[in-house]
Length: 55
View 1: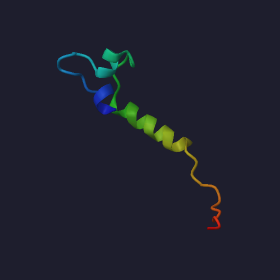
View 2: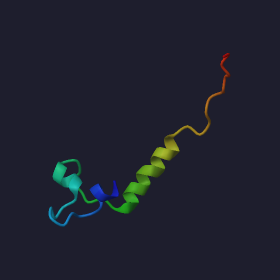
View 3: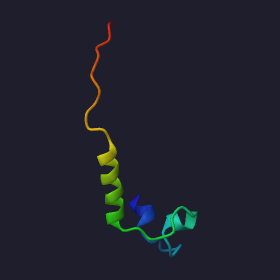
């Protein structure tokens, strides 16, 4: 993700995500960290009860 959204490609002179039409602005590393933290916060912290199967 860092390569495609934050690193300017030498031959393209823009980030690969811009070349593909996926993203308009150049992202910062902090933007990627914010996305990861948001996804982790939305994930449920407690799993449901575990029920053993009869085998």
